[in-house]
Structures are given as structure tokens and as C-alpha cells.
Image (cartoon, rainbow, N blue to C red; front, side, top):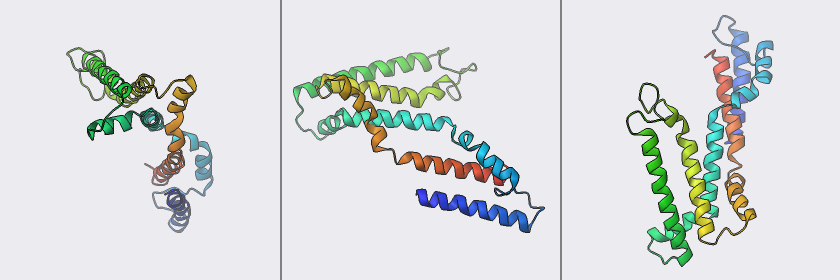
Length: 195
């Protein structure tokens, strides 16, 4: 995937240069012209600076914590009607209580009239609720995972808790180069086509 994205970026650079050289009155910019080179160097970090990166990182941390704490495996065993250890059952009970509390808090903050997380006009989208939905889900994933891990005896030290928080980042590190290449290609297309 990374090779394809880099290849498309190189193709865009060369084709924008050829197209603008062959047809100067074309409504298009070249990435090899002076303005294009300044744009590539000056706007690289700006192209990557979108909230999607933060949301991806938070969801990866939450998902990694769910896997590393054993919550996913225990939930799977529960659904498959396999026998759970006593501490796993306690941990799942804690998770269910936390999820109920989280849902009640969200309903009170966003779904009643004049709720705090609604927009000024009283709508959910766009509002503080819609802006914070993915971070709130990631936060709930982390809290439930760590609670389960501690209650089930799987996470017994601070080092294990921290390792659980970083587990997903190590497993999903391959996503970040693809993210960088994809957003740079998207920004380059917008520059060339003057969008």
C-alpha cells in the first residue's frame, strides 16, 4: 500500500509538471515549479495536521488495551459459552457496570433537552457531542480494559498497565506511514488541481 501511494505521488509530481509545461493555460499547478516545491516543503506538516490522526491514535490505544488486558478474549469466551474464571466474571461485571454508567452519562450530557453537549441550536451534529464522540469511545475502551485487567488479575503492576496502553501502538505502527503517504498525496492533488 505504501509503495502504491508513493508511486502515485511521484506520478502526480511528474504528470503535473508535464501537463503544465505542455499546456500553460491549463487550470493546474506544477509540483516541480518554484511555487510547488515551496508548497511541498512548507505545507508537509500542515497536510498531516488533521484531527483524524489523534482519533486513530486514541482508538488504537483503546483497542490495544482491550486485547492486552484480556477483555476481548473473555468476552469472546462468554459469547461462546465457555467457562470463565471467577476473576474474569468479576472483571466482566465491573466492565458492564462501567458501560452502564458511561451510557447514562452520555444520555444525560447529550440527549435530554438543553443538554450540555448539544450545539447552541440544540442539535447533536455538529456539536460538542459529535466532536468528542470518538475520544469518548476510546476513553471508555481504555477505562473498561484497565478495570477488567486489574479486576481479573491480568494486570497486576503499573508496568503491565502501561504496557497495555502501548500494546496497540506497537501492533498498529504499520498504519502511520500509510497515513502520512495518503494525506500527502491528498494534499498534493488538492494543490495541483487548485481545490
